[in-house]
Amino acid sequence: MRPTAKRTARSRRSAGARRSAGARRSAGARRSARTRRSARVAVVALLALVAGLLSGCGSSGGGGPDTVRVSYKQSMDNNVKIMDEHLARVKAQFEKAHAGKKVELVPIKAPDADYYTKVQQLMRSPKTAPDLVYEDTFLINADITAGLLRPLDDYLADWPDWARYEDSAKEAARGQDGKVYGVPDGTDTRGLWFNKEVFAKAGLPADWRPKDWDELLAAARTIKRRVPDVIPLNVFTGKGAGEAATMQGFQMLLYGTGADPLYDPKREKWVTGSKGFRDALEFVRTVYTEGLGPKASDALDPNVATRVPGEWLPEGRLAIALDGSWLGNNWVRGGGTPWPKWHEVLGQAPMPTQHGQSPGRVSMSGGWTWAIPAKAGNPDLAWEFVKVLSTRENSVDFHVANAGIAVRKDVAADPKYRRSMPGVEFFTGLVEFTHYRPALPVYPQVSTAIQEAMEHVTAGGTPPARAAAIYDERVRSISGGAVTGP
Image (cartoon, rainbow, N blue to C red; front, side, top):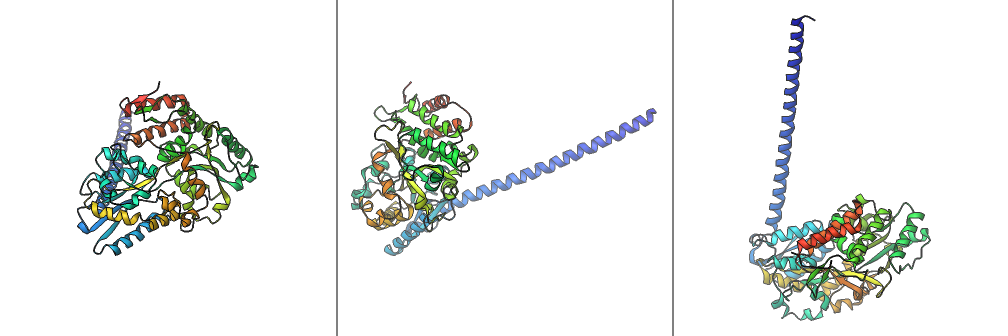
């Protein structure tokens, strides 16, 4: 090829390269512009959502001194309206009895962890603080320490109904300073739900009562072998399930070992190096490494706590669920997943202790309270609403609809309550065997550390001893070294 031809060819290639580079730069610029526009749109949408939520809850705007604003957790299931309907009834009663006063209901639809965060954000400012909030008992001391809640002792001293509440429920709402910061609306217990139709296919008895962990795992292995298209056992695990993993899952195991608890109240220290902690993680590891539970991707999905009562149990896809007393409210008429025959298909059994040692069964209890934020604009009006909300009649109606466990003695004795839901007497009977979470300011952080340890053994292949050691280090850091044990 002649030199001129070569230069011409090189020129053509150079020009082509310049055009290609220019095209790539142009395309990249267009993509960057689209990315920036998408990011701006997302930020604007997020800010609008937060602004709307805050303005909707602000005590300084809207109805002023004659309006009580009530923030509560709305069900993630669009079909579950139990709390919405309950509060709407109480709102009507309150407004009828208090002429000129109004109630503004401010639902927050979010998973538990997101709900806690949003409520705490709202309570930090007088401009956004509701007058009344639905407060999980395990957060009370954390919110007290943060200066977010108002003590209720002066109100309670003049309220005769307070004497009708169980002492254990009162303690769950009490701060470390000895003052009460919430009025409980119920409690709960936990045990094993099992599908009797699946059990029949597997050759297992309809009156199943496992005596120890080995018998529970043996039943799950039998189901896996004989009914392979069904998930044998669900134990909540990992950060996706949040507090359900810590409480329904891990602590139901830990307190069944008979070993050290999470926290030593006498020494006022968190327990580390616990054999019971490692044994509980070993149980979780066994469930997921042997394929006795859901796939890890499903188990760690944040929606798993909704899928258990909304899909897996009513569709016959799950044989055994370690879960709470409230599940029945999903299946009653008006629930999220109406299931007329659920009480015929499902049985209940106590969660056994590790080796069947005394007392032979274990449960965990929690519950929610109605609390008044420290920066509420209308605390006295909020208290008047609490009194209407907490009457015997309204409490009975709520527990009947919500499958809750009563904390008022007169409600627990009410015939309507006692015949309200199949299994209510079974779960009420577990109260004497129950345990409560350490209601301490750092507990939410400890709970997250437990979820991480569970996740390590569920999906990461981490040995339980190593996951427990990581937890121990995290708790030392979280508590500022306030630990006891190796």
